[in-house]
Image (cartoon, rainbow, N blue to C red; front, side, top):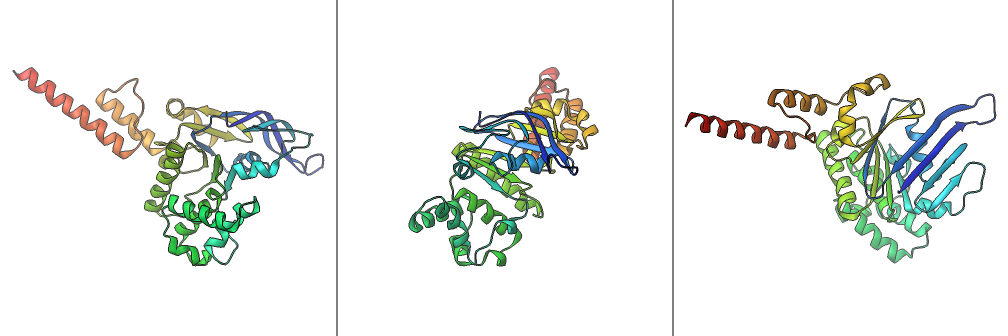
Length: 295
């Protein structure tokens, strides 16, 4: 497992009259090399959860194991710097983590902070830019002069330059246009499939991630109310509405098509391309049966 939580609680301003429970009795298991989606209404605890993945926040009670490091409530957690190198966190707004006057300096900051030479940091910066499909010409640009989509990719590249085992992203497609959103999800999917990285994405746009995710989690009022495969989520989608999760349109389309064509006990097709292919197969099959019946 890449990440395991056991009965984790977290309170802001713990032991004070202003204490507020953000996570309550959370158990979760995330396998290495998987693409995981996390959903939940505003205030469900998603951002708090993400910050525990790399030790920004530590549990008030319970145990958090990330890779080979374990954080136990009330005990000193060693090697947090190494954990933050191996678990890269990309914030919802890229301007929160871009601060240098050139893109190259931003990308070199993390690797150099963890002991890389300037030459090695620059090499990592170039590789990270290429992975994100960004032109190397942008390295000399001020990051705040880039488009929103470019800034978001640069923010992700700045984390990739540290070569993390786990990449955690908070609403990475927020504010992007539909084409840029689709392109970014494809890039993140390839990082998982081709490089074996664990990718964890918080999103309220479930439709764009459903065709790619291996696993889903749903949080509600600081508790994990669902954790499982995409197939399990599709089967339980109606129950998620009581937790503020609207049934994604792709699931509605899949159900309507399954009823029309009599599909049953099949792995759901949740992208437009996959649905089109499945419809074509059914139509062709009906045509063949019709021809056979007329002979």
